[in-house]
Amino acid sequence: MIYRNADFARNITWHPEISPEAPARARQFLDGERELFHLARGSREVTALDMFLETATDLAIDRGVTGEILVRATNCGESLLLTGKTASVLRSYIDDEPVSTRDRLDMTLRRRAFV
Image 1 (cartoon, rainbow, N blue to C red):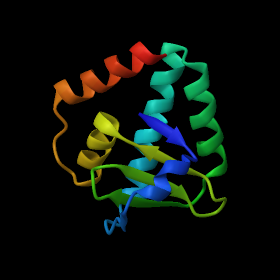
Image 2: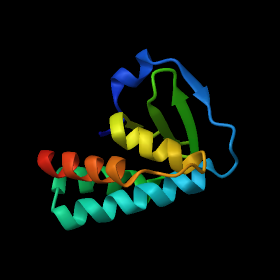
Image 3: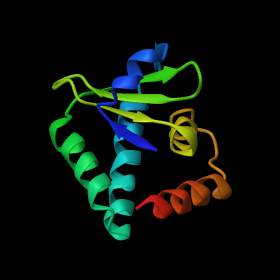
Protein backbone atom coordinates (compact mmCIF):
# COMPACT_ATOMS: atom_id res chain seq x y z
CA MET A 1 0.00 0.00 0.00
CA ILE A 2 0.98 3.61 -0.49
CA TYR A 3 0.04 6.27 2.06
CA ARG A 4 0.63 9.98 1.49
CA ASN A 5 1.79 12.03 4.48
CA ALA A 6 0.91 9.22 6.90
CA ASP A 7 1.02 10.34 10.53
CA PHE A 8 1.75 6.82 11.73
CA ALA A 9 5.09 6.91 9.89
CA ARG A 10 6.38 8.79 12.95
CA ASN A 11 6.01 5.59 14.98
CA ILE A 12 8.45 3.69 12.77
CA THR A 13 12.20 3.63 13.30
CA TRP A 14 13.88 4.78 10.07
CA HIS A 15 17.37 4.39 8.63
CA PRO A 16 18.52 6.51 5.67
CA GLU A 17 19.03 4.70 2.39
CA ILE A 18 22.68 4.85 1.39
CA SER A 19 22.40 3.92 -2.28
CA PRO A 20 22.93 7.03 -4.42
CA GLU A 21 20.63 5.53 -7.06
CA ALA A 22 17.71 5.03 -4.67
CA PRO A 23 15.94 8.36 -5.31
CA ALA A 24 15.97 7.88 -9.09
CA ARG A 25 14.81 4.28 -8.81
CA ALA A 26 12.03 5.27 -6.41
CA ARG A 27 10.90 8.03 -8.78
CA GLN A 28 10.83 5.59 -11.71
CA PHE A 29 8.93 3.02 -9.62
CA LEU A 30 6.37 5.60 -8.45
CA ASP A 31 5.88 6.88 -12.01
CA GLY A 32 5.08 3.29 -13.00
CA GLU A 33 2.66 2.93 -10.09
CA ARG A 34 0.91 6.12 -11.16
CA GLU A 35 0.45 4.69 -14.65
CA LEU A 36 -1.01 1.48 -13.19
CA PHE A 37 -3.45 3.55 -11.11
CA HIS A 38 -4.47 5.50 -14.20
CA LEU A 39 -5.11 2.25 -16.06
CA ALA A 40 -7.11 0.86 -13.14
CA ARG A 41 -8.96 4.16 -12.79
CA GLY A 42 -8.19 4.46 -9.08
CA SER A 43 -8.86 8.17 -8.76
CA ARG A 44 -8.02 8.57 -5.04
CA GLU A 45 -4.67 6.84 -5.43
CA VAL A 46 -3.87 8.66 -8.67
CA THR A 47 -4.58 12.03 -7.04
CA ALA A 48 -2.30 11.28 -4.07
CA LEU A 49 0.53 10.07 -6.28
CA ASP A 50 0.06 12.90 -8.78
CA MET A 51 0.17 15.51 -6.03
CA PHE A 52 3.32 14.01 -4.57
CA LEU A 53 5.15 13.49 -7.86
CA GLU A 54 4.25 16.93 -9.20
CA THR A 55 5.64 18.73 -6.14
CA ALA A 56 8.56 16.46 -5.24
CA THR A 57 11.77 17.44 -6.98
CA ASP A 58 14.36 16.09 -4.55
CA LEU A 59 13.76 12.69 -2.97
CA ALA A 60 15.28 11.01 0.05
CA ILE A 61 14.60 7.36 0.89
CA ASP A 62 14.42 5.80 4.35
CA ARG A 63 13.99 2.15 5.30
CA GLY A 64 11.84 1.11 8.22
CA VAL A 65 13.14 -1.55 10.57
CA THR A 66 10.08 -3.68 9.80
CA GLY A 67 10.32 -3.40 6.00
CA GLU A 68 8.54 -0.16 5.16
CA ILE A 69 9.95 2.41 2.75
CA LEU A 70 9.51 6.15 3.27
CA VAL A 71 9.96 8.34 0.20
CA ARG A 72 10.40 11.95 1.30
CA ALA A 73 10.32 15.06 -0.86
CA THR A 74 13.04 17.12 0.77
CA ASN A 75 11.99 20.26 -1.09
CA CYS A 76 8.39 20.43 0.19
CA GLY A 77 7.85 18.21 3.24
CA GLU A 78 5.65 15.67 1.44
CA SER A 79 6.13 11.93 1.93
CA LEU A 80 4.88 8.56 0.77
CA LEU A 81 4.91 5.53 3.06
CA LEU A 82 5.10 2.21 1.22
CA THR A 83 4.21 -0.99 3.03
CA GLY A 84 3.76 -4.68 2.26
CA LYS A 85 4.43 -6.00 -1.23
CA THR A 86 4.76 -2.48 -2.61
CA ALA A 87 7.66 -1.75 -0.25
CA SER A 88 9.16 -5.16 -0.96
CA VAL A 89 9.17 -4.60 -4.72
CA LEU A 90 10.68 -1.11 -4.38
CA ARG A 91 13.35 -2.47 -2.01
CA SER A 92 14.28 -5.03 -4.65
CA TYR A 93 14.55 -2.31 -7.31
CA ILE A 94 16.74 -0.18 -5.04
CA ASP A 95 18.94 -3.16 -4.11
CA ASP A 96 19.22 -4.16 -7.77
CA GLU A 97 17.75 -7.56 -6.96
CA PRO A 98 15.39 -9.52 -9.17
CA VAL A 99 11.71 -8.94 -8.56
CA SER A 100 9.70 -12.08 -8.80
CA THR A 101 6.82 -11.99 -11.21
CA ARG A 102 4.64 -13.43 -8.47
CA ASP A 103 5.42 -10.55 -6.09
CA ARG A 104 4.82 -7.92 -8.75
CA LEU A 105 1.61 -9.55 -9.98
CA ASP A 106 0.37 -10.09 -6.42
CA MET A 107 1.00 -6.44 -5.59
CA THR A 108 -0.83 -5.26 -8.73
CA LEU A 109 -3.79 -7.59 -8.24
CA ARG A 110 -4.10 -6.73 -4.56
CA ARG A 111 -4.05 -3.01 -5.36
CA ARG A 112 -6.67 -3.46 -8.07
CA ALA A 113 -8.97 -5.10 -5.54
CA PHE A 114 -8.81 -1.94 -3.41
CA VAL A 115 -9.43 0.48 -6.30
